[in-house]
Image 1: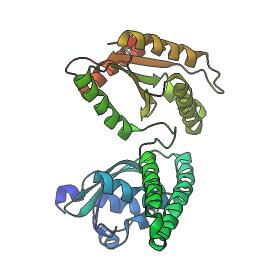
Image 2 (image 1 turned 90 degrees about the vertical axis):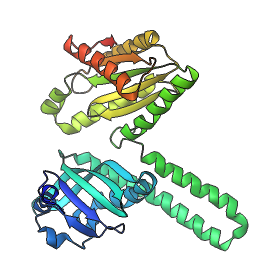
Image 3 (image 1 turned 180 degrees about the horizontal axis):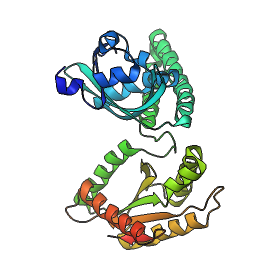
Amino acid sequence: MDTQLYYAPCGFIMTEPDGRIIEANEMISGLIGERSSELKQRHITSLLTLPSKLYFQTYFSPVISMYKKVDEMYLTLETSEGPVPVLMNAQERDGQYEYIFVKMKTRDEFENGLISAKLQVEKILEDTDNANGELQKLLSELESKREEIIEANKRLEDLAMIDPLTSVKNRRYYEETLSAFLEKFHSESFIFSYLIIDIDHFKKVNDEFGHPVGDQVLQDLAWKLEQEVRKDDVLVRFGGEEFVILLSGISEKLAVKIADRMRQNIESSDWPHSPITISIGVSGAKEMDTKESIFKRADEALYYSKGNGRNQVTLR
């Protein structure tokens, strides 16, 4: 490992495909509280808390196998000073796995959700294992059992596209779907509109009532937005308190009316701790648009909405 990587301001680990640690830099050693030489040949899951270990063992292998990388996996390290929440990215390169760890704020409810998700996935995997055993014994049922396996794998893939806090689609799903929308727009003249939504004064909610209440607001808002969209529309949690909605077959003029209806419904909803309002930026798909350009216009519109008093809709 070169000197710059060894002293980089983020944790770095390299492992064999089976999870045995080959290299660890100074940052990760400091987090864990052990010298890098002591970490070598340990399994990477030995550095994690039990809920994070269960989550890692369930999701990491299928995702890295499918995409050759894993983005934005929230984990908790077991360190000499107690649990430390981190955000992990990983990639496969030259037959080995490389991991980057960045410290995050604590999310108490996240690991509880992971345990529940782990139990659900274990049930799916148990059913799949039972089906595989039957496949070996009863060749005559090969086709039906194969369909069960395909369905289980699809459910695992779907789980990798879900935001664990709000249960709506996540950033990974957004990237794939927006690319598909733009390709269809350029090839088939398919129209759609892009909405980016931000909760007004969300930091104040967290500061006054605590992060558990903030998380509940995010969950409630996601549910309310789901009631506003149609089957062919796409709702994703973009990150933090921001959500994105892709309105299928909707012009930007109509999208503004839909967005303002959403804004009014959120404003008039009952919120248990504090009134909640949202600001929205809207943009319709245009000729030569890319993912970056349509996002930029909608983001500029959102910025104007927030800078112009919040609780409003702006079109760009």
